[in-house]
Length: 360
Ligand code: ADP
Image (tube, rainbow, N blue to C red; front, side):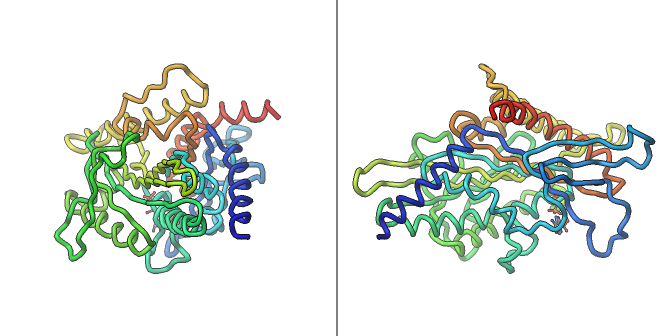
């Protein structure tokens, strides 16, 4: 019967979730050379099946020219959006069972963060990124479970710029009237003070994304620049009521497109630019500190050190699952940033990986 099918599906999901609980995963994605760009030499020398990536520095000789980094997974340039999503699916689905989770896109500007999270072109479903696929999947799965649990899904979209949170779903005078709900309905979750809007289908989500993009542009002095210097957070809240027991399930998923991680040349950055760069540096290193403190099972987790980690606090640590996609631009002129991105990612990943290995 469909009831048993759902129970079986829940059991499979549950096992996948057990597998992920408290875990911090780091996946590395290498961006292809872009069309119209000269295909220079790639700094990615080799990608191993077991999560290794070897970086080649042609300016160095001998042993020093190559360095290997290890993660949970490394994707080559021919991976599809569908494959990327498939690997995040257990985490996303566990939100319907009342778990919290965070998915981050980390990397320098132009390395493919937005490509992974949103995709390059909303009009073609094939290229949709994790955000849309996640919501589509949540809608489908909640429908399939409708006999057992009644779900409500709502989203928030915020931007964190210079340590300030901005609500991207404020009404924008467009023809769509937003059904904005009060935060108090999300009791029990430490959510940023921003509006949330119920959604029931992917079209709702697409509409909201457009409004969010538009609102993001309004506050920007120079649009392209701004979006790479702020963190954008799409939060999905799920509230489920089990029909037989009346038990309540609450889950929360944060999908985070981080600000570009590139270091700014101190001699060039002045004024606003310098301030932005300092805020970004501080919040990215605060994020790294929190994740590595969690991985080390430290007693003190320094959530208070940045707005970003404060906002995400409930979904980082404890039973929550964390997944970070680190993005690599394979061009030679990005080599310095590539190495520092991989070092950051290794710091975030290594301890957890070490522990996982020694358990086996
Ligand atoms: P970021 O968000 O890190 O600044 P983008 O996602 O905007 O970077 O990517 C920069 C450019 O590279 C865009 O033109 C994007 O379409 C392209 N791009 C990024 N990743 C891929 C990929 N995996 N396959 C094809 N094109 C990509």
